[in-house]
Image (cartoon, rainbow, N blue to C red; front, side):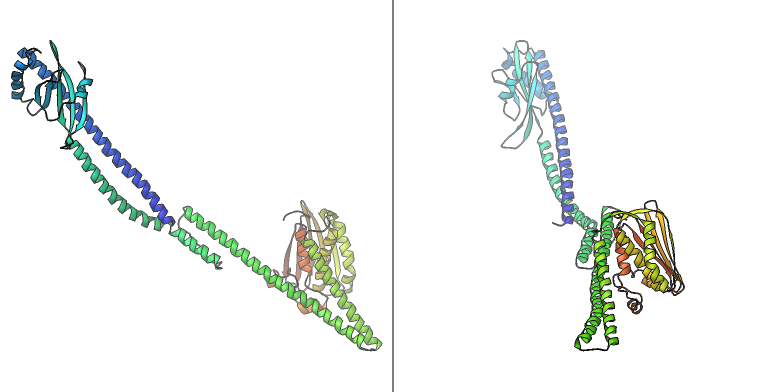
Length: 473
């Protein structure tokens, strides 16, 4: 069942319970109040009849002995009185003999037996044949030598008739209210639940692959909050899907680039090896072929070692111990100086004392890669600076060169595996495009991040802020 139907039916049930129950209770209370008033009136009439009958009997000297001789006279006095005209009452002896009768309902002996001297009682009786309803009252008339029973009846048929009419009107009115309210409640529920239906449609579109689909936020109620939460979830889903798609694209690019990087040196190795195998070559040509085989083999070795470092850092399998960062900076600088000197570059090292939990070999690889990239980007005679700064909760490394710089559009891509800003220059210098990807992985393993700043044709600066292995950045 749809929620609009549920809301409409639930509200209608509540309306029926409260409106129907309240109306029924009101009619019942009104009837009960009217019945109490009628009983009080019937009691007053019965008392007036008793007092009047006693007074007439006393005035005419009526006793139990001459009751039936004087009874006719008493009857004429009562019939001539305007008060008694139209009154329904009956007077009987204790034995049940009738003294006077001007009453339609039959005598109620059970009621008379319950009434004692000085007390009275009543019952509500319905005649089966006529359907009329009476308040049947019973009282005692005290004479000097005995007691008579006085019965009176008050017709309250109209009271019950009115109640039946009220109940009938109540049923018709309840039916009309339920019909009208049901339609209004359904339309209102459909209107109120429209944002939920729109939200469901947006969810279906999202499930079908339309990740740009969003729900319309209308109002500041709970449904509006739900729509906002849904849109936030959709934003997160879209972001994750795009990240997965981008990751899949990078994996494909990584595989394609890896195959290409393997193919080039392998082709050269196989070609020159085939030349050596095919026959005798001149000594110069043989030496040249062996040199190509050796250089391409070293290139494959470097590629395999870089991939191995990527796997080690990426899976957090490296050994962790305290690393002296100042000593590590000096050590990496000494290892890079020969290559820097060959390019006539000046390497300046400024490192503060500081310690960091990590893997010394991976951190040295990070520094060597950054210094090597700075060397490749610098023109002969330039300066490369390595700075180390101790932080309250880590260490920051910064490598600056004054070379050709990096275009702003390339800065976000340079840490992707096998990505090269200048592919021909990188391959000519033995690069495979794994250096910065490896640096990013090593920095992440040490709870750090890499930041790049560059001005094309002037300088490039790489900042690596490390928090230590096992530290979440």
